[in-house]
Length: 254
Image (cartoon, rainbow, N blue to C red; front, side):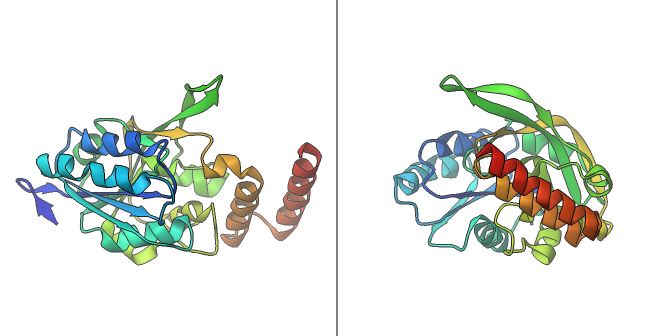
């Protein structure tokens, strides 16, 4: 869909559940984008705190800026079910997903649109990492690897700094068999399909390292291993050996 003088519409999706402590920064990072042709979709999993009240509070502010603002609040089957709901709702040409404990840089959408070409299907920029220490978050470095590095060398891509054309997301979606690593699986499937990607040489997003993947490191590591085995990136023997080491590592630590 094209609006605002033929500028491509970008659909931004945020999923949340009991996110009152952090979601304001996420929402405001979308509200304050220097690129104006945005559709913002929030999928709330029926929060029990005041997350929904905060979401409703921003509705008029988005309307005043001419940004499409849509939200739903209902139970879901987990984070990737919620993301798939958001994708189903998205009408933009491009889709970005930013979780409720992360936030975009103010020029994120602008930098994507100004860098991609007509045949780009996946755009990926740099993600800044923030560690919680002594009562506050501190910048701890940046992360991003190419789809090739992810697929061939087992590096991770930072999904909060990835934008994908709507038609690709609609065709692939997230596999609900994974609780934490479905984004890795989806990016691998997209890479294997041969879609052209483009690197955006800017920091696009910011990631809090104590999110769900940081809190559940064992499950995250186990699922990442399973994803790479399912895509034949590691052998059965390697998979078994890594899994044993993983269990021993976490059983000793905890």
